[in-house]
Length: 93
Image (cartoon, rainbow, N blue to C red; front, side, top):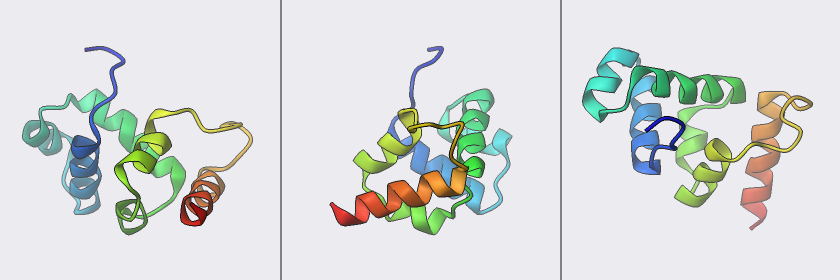
């Protein structure tokens, strides 16, 4: 299953547990997702510099786009700027 994206339901579980200070080992045991995959998603989450509350407002489609598609000019935008740009675009749709 290398390099496969996890489904959005699992991603929401991971982010929520992480927000509530659950460790990666426990998250892995509860979701069945490898710790390395969890750490990959948490790295992107931390890069965005956003909160669980903001992410929980997004639809599955938008959350998928945010985590599974490379953002435009990823290296040129800070994580927070990228998230806010995406969030504004989502709110206007």
